[in-house]
Image (cartoon, rainbow, N blue to C red; front, side, top):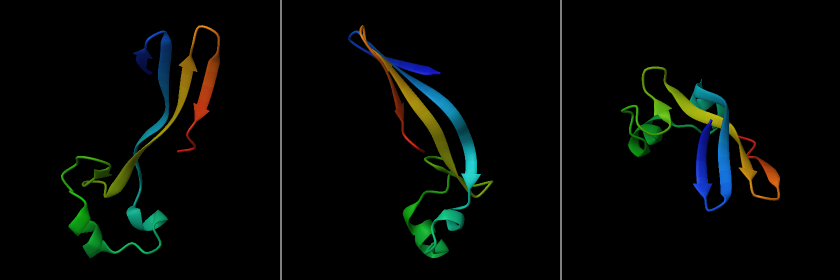
Amino acid sequence: MRQIRIGDVAIDAVIERKGPWRRPQDFLPAHDEATFHQHFALDGAGGFRRGARHDVITCQTFVMRTPRHTILVDTRT
């Protein structure tokens, strides 16, 4: 879990799943390989892993804690 503090507010990122997930063509119906290569660096940086040819997507939730409240932020990703 990673934490960021802003004043007296603590924000924790709770990682649910991280890593190679799906091929771009599995969730982008109009995926075009040539366009993909033109717009995305395939060097392992960013959200694409060249060796696995999968997008790297992190599914996470955030927990914000203030002196009075605890708030769960579900990003649905």
